[in-house]
Image 1 (cartoon, rainbow, N blue to C red):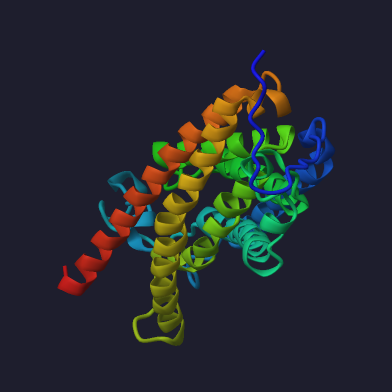
Image 2: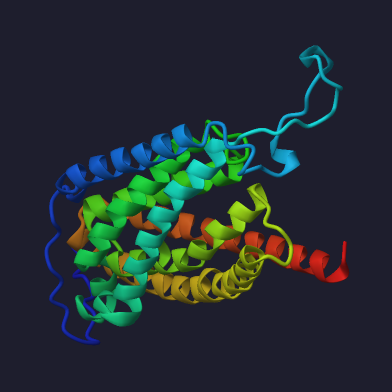
Amino acid sequence: MTTPLISKKTDNNVPPPIPHGFHHQIKKISGGFIFLTLVYVVTYYFLQDSGSYLRPAERFCPLNTAEDGREAGTVEPCSRPDLFAFQVSSAIMQLFMAVMGLRSWHITKSAQKAIPATPEGRIFGYIEDATVLNAGIFVYQTWDFIFSLTIPEHSTFIMLSHHAAAAIMAYFSLEYQYIHHYAVYFGGCSEISSVFLVLCDLDVYFPSTPGSAYGTLIFACQVTFTFLFLFYRVIGWWKVSYHLWSDALYVLKGGQAELFRPGKSFILYLFLTLNVLLGFLQVYWFGLIVQKIVEVLSGA
Protein backbone atom coordinates (compact mmCIF):
# COMPACT_ATOMS: atom_id res chain seq x y z
CA MET A 1 0.00 0.00 0.00
CA THR A 2 1.33 3.42 -1.01
CA THR A 3 1.79 5.89 1.81
CA PRO A 4 -0.07 9.12 1.03
CA LEU A 5 2.11 12.17 0.53
CA ILE A 6 1.04 14.67 3.18
CA SER A 7 1.68 18.30 2.35
CA LYS A 8 4.47 19.88 4.41
CA LYS A 9 3.58 23.48 3.58
CA THR A 10 1.92 24.17 6.96
CA ASP A 11 -0.11 22.44 9.64
CA ASN A 12 -2.20 19.70 8.04
CA ASN A 13 -4.74 19.04 10.78
CA VAL A 14 -7.82 18.61 8.58
CA PRO A 15 -11.09 18.26 10.53
CA PRO A 16 -12.91 14.96 10.00
CA PRO A 17 -15.89 15.03 7.66
CA ILE A 18 -19.36 15.65 9.04
CA PRO A 19 -21.39 12.56 8.07
CA HIS A 20 -24.31 13.27 5.74
CA GLY A 21 -23.93 17.04 5.70
CA PHE A 22 -26.97 17.37 3.46
CA HIS A 23 -29.18 15.66 6.03
CA HIS A 24 -27.97 18.09 8.71
CA GLN A 25 -29.18 21.00 6.58
CA ILE A 26 -32.43 19.46 5.33
CA LYS A 27 -34.69 21.66 7.48
CA LYS A 28 -33.01 24.83 6.27
CA ILE A 29 -33.12 23.58 2.69
CA SER A 30 -36.82 22.71 2.92
CA GLY A 31 -37.59 26.03 4.59
CA GLY A 32 -35.65 27.95 1.95
CA PHE A 33 -37.48 26.21 -0.88
CA ILE A 34 -40.86 26.92 0.72
CA PHE A 35 -39.88 30.56 1.36
CA LEU A 36 -38.84 31.17 -2.26
CA THR A 37 -42.01 29.55 -3.52
CA LEU A 38 -44.17 31.71 -1.25
CA VAL A 39 -42.38 34.86 -2.42
CA TYR A 40 -42.99 33.86 -6.02
CA VAL A 41 -46.65 32.93 -5.52
CA VAL A 42 -47.51 36.07 -3.51
CA THR A 43 -45.74 38.37 -5.97
CA TYR A 44 -47.38 36.61 -8.92
CA TYR A 45 -50.83 36.88 -7.31
CA PHE A 46 -50.65 40.64 -6.75
CA LEU A 47 -49.28 41.34 -10.24
CA GLN A 48 -51.70 39.26 -12.28
CA ASP A 49 -53.30 42.35 -13.87
CA SER A 50 -50.34 44.68 -13.80
CA GLY A 51 -50.13 45.47 -17.52
CA SER A 52 -51.31 49.05 -17.06
CA TYR A 53 -48.46 50.04 -14.71
CA LEU A 54 -45.86 47.28 -15.19
CA ARG A 55 -45.92 46.71 -18.91
CA PRO A 56 -43.48 44.15 -20.33
CA ALA A 57 -41.51 44.78 -23.50
CA GLU A 58 -43.54 43.85 -26.56
CA ARG A 59 -41.44 40.80 -27.35
CA PHE A 60 -42.50 39.28 -24.04
CA CYS A 61 -46.19 39.70 -24.83
CA PRO A 62 -48.03 37.24 -27.09
CA LEU A 63 -49.25 38.51 -30.44
CA ASN A 64 -53.01 38.64 -30.93
CA THR A 65 -54.62 36.51 -33.57
CA ALA A 66 -57.57 37.10 -35.85
CA GLU A 67 -59.62 34.70 -33.74
CA ASP A 68 -59.32 37.13 -30.82
CA GLY A 69 -61.65 39.54 -32.59
CA ARG A 70 -58.82 42.08 -32.82
CA GLU A 71 -56.43 42.92 -35.61
CA ALA A 72 -54.03 40.05 -36.15
CA GLY A 73 -50.43 40.76 -35.21
CA THR A 74 -51.16 43.62 -32.83
CA VAL A 75 -50.03 43.59 -29.23
CA GLU A 76 -52.48 44.27 -26.46
CA PRO A 77 -51.34 45.33 -22.97
CA CYS A 78 -50.40 42.19 -21.13
CA SER A 79 -49.14 41.16 -17.73
CA ARG A 80 -46.10 38.98 -17.06
CA PRO A 81 -46.22 38.44 -13.30
CA ASP A 82 -44.16 35.29 -13.78
CA LEU A 83 -41.14 37.23 -15.03
CA PHE A 84 -41.29 39.81 -12.24
CA ALA A 85 -41.96 37.26 -9.48
CA PHE A 86 -39.08 35.13 -10.71
CA GLN A 87 -36.69 38.10 -10.56
CA VAL A 88 -37.82 39.00 -7.03
CA SER A 89 -37.23 35.47 -5.76
CA SER A 90 -33.91 35.25 -7.56
CA ALA A 91 -32.76 38.60 -6.17
CA ILE A 92 -33.24 37.41 -2.60
CA MET A 93 -31.07 34.33 -3.05
CA GLN A 94 -28.45 36.02 -5.18
CA LEU A 95 -28.06 38.74 -2.57
CA PHE A 96 -27.76 36.11 0.16
CA MET A 97 -25.10 34.14 -1.72
CA ALA A 98 -23.19 37.28 -2.70
CA VAL A 99 -23.11 38.55 0.89
CA MET A 100 -21.94 35.16 2.17
CA GLY A 101 -19.19 35.01 -0.43
CA LEU A 102 -18.11 38.62 0.10
CA ARG A 103 -17.99 38.19 3.87
CA SER A 104 -16.19 34.86 3.96
CA TRP A 105 -13.72 35.48 1.14
CA HIS A 106 -12.92 39.18 1.56
CA ILE A 107 -14.00 40.44 5.01
CA THR A 108 -13.68 37.77 7.71
CA LYS A 109 -11.53 35.61 5.40
CA SER A 110 -12.94 32.49 7.05
CA ALA A 111 -12.57 30.76 3.68
CA GLN A 112 -8.83 30.94 4.27
CA LYS A 113 -8.45 31.12 8.06
CA ALA A 114 -10.83 28.30 9.07
CA ILE A 115 -8.78 25.61 7.33
CA PRO A 116 -5.13 24.60 7.02
CA ALA A 117 -3.38 26.46 4.18
CA THR A 118 -2.62 23.21 2.36
CA PRO A 119 -4.13 21.30 -0.56
CA GLU A 120 -5.72 18.93 1.96
CA GLY A 121 -7.20 21.83 3.91
CA ARG A 122 -8.65 23.54 0.86
CA ILE A 123 -10.10 20.30 -0.54
CA PHE A 124 -11.33 18.58 2.64
CA GLY A 125 -11.43 21.27 5.35
CA TYR A 126 -14.67 22.30 7.05
CA ILE A 127 -15.91 25.89 6.78
CA GLU A 128 -19.19 26.79 8.48
CA ASP A 129 -19.93 29.63 6.05
CA ALA A 130 -19.49 27.22 3.14
CA THR A 131 -21.98 24.80 4.69
CA VAL A 132 -24.63 27.51 4.94
CA LEU A 133 -23.76 28.78 1.48
CA ASN A 134 -23.93 25.33 -0.11
CA ALA A 135 -27.37 24.80 1.39
CA GLY A 136 -28.46 28.13 -0.11
CA ILE A 137 -26.96 27.30 -3.49
CA PHE A 138 -28.75 23.95 -3.58
CA VAL A 139 -32.05 25.60 -2.66
CA TYR A 140 -31.75 28.34 -5.25
CA GLN A 141 -30.42 26.28 -8.16
CA THR A 142 -32.97 23.50 -7.61
CA TRP A 143 -35.81 25.99 -7.22
CA ASP A 144 -34.58 27.92 -10.25
CA PHE A 145 -34.43 24.76 -12.36
CA ILE A 146 -37.99 23.73 -11.50
CA PHE A 147 -39.60 27.15 -11.92
CA SER A 148 -37.62 27.91 -15.08
CA LEU A 149 -39.46 25.03 -16.71
CA THR A 150 -42.68 27.08 -16.42
CA ILE A 151 -41.23 30.25 -18.00
CA PRO A 152 -40.24 30.05 -21.69
CA GLU A 153 -37.65 32.83 -21.40
CA HIS A 154 -35.75 30.89 -18.73
CA SER A 155 -36.17 27.29 -19.87
CA THR A 156 -33.23 27.24 -22.27
CA PHE A 157 -30.86 24.29 -22.41
CA ILE A 158 -27.90 26.38 -21.29
CA MET A 159 -29.65 27.87 -18.25
CA LEU A 160 -31.19 24.56 -17.16
CA SER A 161 -27.81 22.83 -17.53
CA HIS A 162 -26.15 25.57 -15.48
CA HIS A 163 -28.71 25.20 -12.67
CA ALA A 164 -28.36 21.40 -12.67
CA ALA A 165 -24.54 21.52 -12.57
CA ALA A 166 -24.47 24.08 -9.75
CA ALA A 167 -27.02 22.11 -7.71
CA ILE A 168 -25.05 18.88 -8.14
CA MET A 169 -21.80 20.51 -7.02
CA ALA A 170 -23.50 22.12 -4.02
CA TYR A 171 -25.01 18.78 -2.98
CA PHE A 172 -21.72 16.85 -3.10
CA SER A 173 -19.79 19.66 -1.43
CA LEU A 174 -22.37 19.75 1.37
CA GLU A 175 -22.90 16.01 1.76
CA TYR A 176 -19.24 14.92 1.76
CA GLN A 177 -17.51 18.12 2.98
CA TYR A 178 -15.62 18.69 -0.22
CA ILE A 179 -13.93 21.90 -1.52
CA HIS A 180 -15.57 24.21 1.03
CA HIS A 181 -12.82 26.76 0.37
CA TYR A 182 -13.58 26.88 -3.34
CA ALA A 183 -17.35 26.71 -2.86
CA VAL A 184 -17.17 30.10 -1.15
CA TYR A 185 -15.70 31.66 -4.28
CA PHE A 186 -17.57 29.81 -7.03
CA GLY A 187 -20.92 29.81 -5.24
CA GLY A 188 -20.65 33.09 -3.36
CA CYS A 189 -18.24 35.60 -4.88
CA SER A 190 -19.35 34.75 -8.40
CA GLU A 191 -22.86 35.88 -7.47
CA ILE A 192 -21.73 39.41 -6.53
CA SER A 193 -22.19 40.50 -10.15
CA SER A 194 -25.62 38.80 -10.25
CA VAL A 195 -26.99 41.26 -7.68
CA PHE A 196 -26.72 43.97 -10.35
CA LEU A 197 -27.82 41.61 -13.11
CA VAL A 198 -31.24 41.30 -11.46
CA LEU A 199 -32.03 44.96 -12.12
CA CYS A 200 -30.51 44.74 -15.60
CA ASP A 201 -32.79 41.80 -16.41
CA LEU A 202 -35.80 43.61 -15.00
CA ASP A 203 -35.06 46.43 -17.42
CA VAL A 204 -34.99 43.92 -20.28
CA TYR A 205 -38.39 42.54 -19.34
CA PHE A 206 -39.91 45.84 -18.16
CA PRO A 207 -38.01 48.64 -19.96
CA SER A 208 -37.29 51.88 -18.15
CA THR A 209 -37.94 55.30 -19.66
CA PRO A 210 -34.76 56.69 -21.25
CA GLY A 211 -33.41 59.63 -19.27
CA SER A 212 -35.42 58.81 -16.14
CA ALA A 213 -33.84 58.36 -12.72
CA TYR A 214 -34.63 54.65 -12.92
CA GLY A 215 -33.04 54.52 -16.37
CA THR A 216 -29.88 56.12 -14.96
CA LEU A 217 -29.83 53.56 -12.15
CA ILE A 218 -30.14 50.74 -14.67
CA PHE A 219 -27.24 52.12 -16.69
CA ALA A 220 -25.09 52.28 -13.54
CA CYS A 221 -26.04 48.67 -12.76
CA GLN A 222 -25.14 47.58 -16.30
CA VAL A 223 -21.69 49.13 -16.06
CA THR A 224 -21.09 47.73 -12.56
CA PHE A 225 -22.33 44.29 -13.59
CA THR A 226 -19.99 44.18 -16.58
CA PHE A 227 -16.87 44.98 -14.56
CA LEU A 228 -17.81 42.65 -11.69
CA PHE A 229 -18.61 39.83 -14.12
CA LEU A 230 -15.22 40.25 -15.77
CA PHE A 231 -13.45 40.40 -12.39
CA TYR A 232 -15.18 37.49 -10.60
CA ARG A 233 -16.57 35.25 -13.34
CA VAL A 234 -13.84 35.45 -15.96
CA ILE A 235 -10.47 36.56 -14.57
CA GLY A 236 -11.10 35.40 -11.00
CA TRP A 237 -12.88 32.22 -12.07
CA TRP A 238 -9.92 30.90 -14.05
CA LYS A 239 -7.38 32.08 -11.48
CA VAL A 240 -9.15 30.25 -8.64
CA SER A 241 -9.80 27.28 -10.94
CA TYR A 242 -6.06 26.92 -11.46
CA HIS A 243 -5.59 26.55 -7.69
CA LEU A 244 -8.52 24.11 -7.50
CA TRP A 245 -6.98 21.91 -10.17
CA SER A 246 -3.56 22.11 -8.55
CA ASP A 247 -4.91 21.08 -5.14
CA ALA A 248 -7.23 18.39 -6.53
CA LEU A 249 -4.54 16.74 -8.66
CA TYR A 250 -2.15 16.88 -5.70
CA VAL A 251 -4.46 14.93 -3.38
CA LEU A 252 -5.55 12.54 -6.15
CA LYS A 253 -2.00 11.66 -7.18
CA GLY A 254 -0.68 11.57 -3.62
CA GLY A 255 -3.40 9.30 -2.25
CA GLN A 256 -4.91 11.79 0.19
CA ALA A 257 -8.20 11.71 -1.71
CA GLU A 258 -8.76 8.07 -0.75
CA LEU A 259 -7.30 8.61 2.72
CA PHE A 260 -9.71 11.41 3.65
CA ARG A 261 -12.73 10.34 1.54
CA PRO A 262 -12.47 6.60 0.78
CA GLY A 263 -14.34 5.62 -2.36
CA LYS A 264 -15.34 9.21 -3.16
CA SER A 265 -12.52 10.30 -5.48
CA PHE A 266 -14.95 10.31 -8.41
CA ILE A 267 -16.54 13.40 -6.87
CA LEU A 268 -13.32 15.35 -7.31
CA TYR A 269 -13.17 14.36 -10.97
CA LEU A 270 -16.79 15.48 -11.32
CA PHE A 271 -15.96 18.82 -9.70
CA LEU A 272 -13.05 19.37 -12.06
CA THR A 273 -15.12 18.51 -15.13
CA LEU A 274 -18.01 20.79 -14.19
CA ASN A 275 -15.58 23.54 -13.17
CA VAL A 276 -14.14 23.65 -16.70
CA LEU A 277 -17.54 23.48 -18.39
CA LEU A 278 -18.93 26.27 -16.21
CA GLY A 279 -15.74 28.27 -16.73
CA PHE A 280 -16.19 28.19 -20.51
CA LEU A 281 -19.83 29.14 -19.98
CA GLN A 282 -18.69 32.29 -18.16
CA VAL A 283 -16.47 33.17 -21.12
CA TYR A 284 -19.37 32.56 -23.52
CA TRP A 285 -21.66 34.81 -21.47
CA PHE A 286 -19.03 37.52 -21.29
CA GLY A 287 -18.72 37.33 -25.07
CA LEU A 288 -22.44 38.06 -25.31
CA ILE A 289 -22.00 41.02 -22.95
CA VAL A 290 -19.19 42.43 -25.10
CA GLN A 291 -21.29 41.90 -28.23
CA LYS A 292 -24.13 43.86 -26.67
CA ILE A 293 -21.78 46.68 -25.66
CA VAL A 294 -20.45 46.90 -29.22
CA GLU A 295 -24.01 47.05 -30.57
CA VAL A 296 -24.89 49.90 -28.22
CA LEU A 297 -21.73 51.88 -28.96
CA SER A 298 -22.17 51.43 -32.70
CA GLY A 299 -25.81 52.48 -32.54
CA ALA A 300 -27.02 49.19 -33.95
